[in-house]
Every structure is written in C-alpha cells, then in structure tokens.
Amino acid sequence: MPRQQTDLRKQVGKDLKIALTSVDKSTSNFAIGLAGIYTVNFEVINSGAEDINITGIGIQAYLKNASGGFVEPAGGYSLLPALPNFPANGILHPGDKFRSTYLRTGLNPADYNGKNLTIILDNSNTIAETNETNNTLEIPVIGNLESWSTPLPDLTFQIDQIAPVTGSTFLNTAIHVSVINTGNGEIPLDVARQIIPSVQVYPAGNPGTNLYNEAYPFATRVNGTQVYPGYYKASGALKPGDKVSIGGSVHINGLSSGATVIFHFTLGTLNNTPLPETNTANNTVDYVYTVQ
Image (cartoon, rainbow, N blue to C red; front, side, top):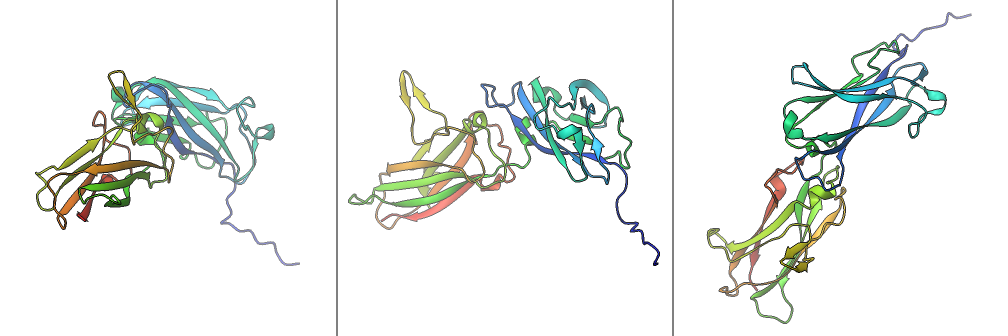
C-alpha cells in the first residue's frame, strides 16, 4: 500500500477575519459634516479550515488616534442568534460569511478628524486562531464620513445633446445634459441634494466673457412662497449608473452663425464641501460648440 501523502500547503486550524463592506450615512435630516448616524457594514469570514461557532463572540469598537492610542470606547455587542441572518446553530463553515453591522449615532466626524474608528472581532480572544492579525478594522475618520464609503462613487457629466432649437433662430440652443454616477459606490440622498451642477457659456479663447450662467442644486428650489421643481431633481440615492437629467433651452444674445463657444459644465456643493469620489478631475467638462 502506498504511503499517504500530506499536502503541507493546505491550511489547518481556525481563523476568523473581518472585512469592511461599506460605511453608510443615514439619509435623515443631518447635513454633511454634522453629527449623524453611521452604519458600518462588515463581514465575519471563516478563513480557516475548521468549523467555528461564532455564538457569543464580541464585536468591540474604539476611537483611537493615528498612532493607535486609545481615545474613547465607541460601543460593542455580541454575535447572537437574535441578529438578522445569524448562521444556523451559530456555525460558520470554512469559507462561510456572516454580514453584520455596527451602528454609531451622534458622531460629528470633525471632532475626530485624523483619528481611527477601530472595530475588533473576537476582542476577548474567545477563539484560538492561527492568525490573530486579521480581526481588526482600522477606518480613518476624515472631514466627512461619506468618504469612508467603499467603494466610492464618481460623478461626471454626460453630454446627451447640444443643438439648435428646431424652427428657431441660431440664438436658441437646446442643452440636454446628465450628471451620471460612473463609480461603483452610491451617493446618499442627503449628499445628492447638496450637489450643484452649473453651466457657463463663453466665446472660445475668452473665458472672461460670460454669455450665460445657470446653477441650481438637485434639491427643489424655493423662491419666497413659490416652489420650483426645476430641471434638476434627485429623489433618491444616486446608485452606480444612475443619472439626473438637466437642461432646457437657452437664448444667448450677441452671437452670429459660425461663432465657436464653450459650454463649461462644473459640479459643486451648496457649502463647498468636497464630494467623496474616486475622481474629481472629471467634475469639469468643456464642450466646444459651433453656433448654427
């Protein structure tokens, strides 16, 4: 009988790890950068070679400074059957995942700028593991917690149509443009309502001469007692691939047929807070147009 061979490359023993999925801000009335409700979504993964009973294992959160020094406790809980989608009998088989969350309320990120929100899986070392280094999430706190979201969104302009209005003179031009999320993450509604797309029109080579300007937020516009839904309206979170159509017909004086103008599209926010994006270079788009 041939001697049984042992594959020494095969992983043995127990090992749990924690992996960040996303950080979501509540789409409540909290404004960007102010104290709000944040949900940290993460996965508990059995990355070892044995079954692990995760019942009673602790999840502990701390706020720490950049060097790892303790700032303050941030709460915690135990993994128990009452949690949604808790595994049958509490058992995670090798390769199994259990998604859980940590809820943080009343947090103003500006107060903890430069600190880390640290979440530790099995903080009491209930499970003897072959690797104890993958049980910790270190999430940097920066100006606003939307920047924690993983993955991040990416907003840019999509030029649908810029053309003369049919049956009109060359002075009337139809602009049909969309603001589109080309990234992999979403923009919560409370952030989307802060976004201001704007368009300026100026002669080619002379950006100091502004022929036309319009800028409105995605939120409903109010002027005195009159409510203007406007062209721009974000009614929900901007998920990957979502877009908000903007545009209409503009009348620009002082142009003759054959003149070249630049449509200058830019994205900003109501309070000039930077948008949490993977790429901000495409927040400005110039479109060269020859007047018909």
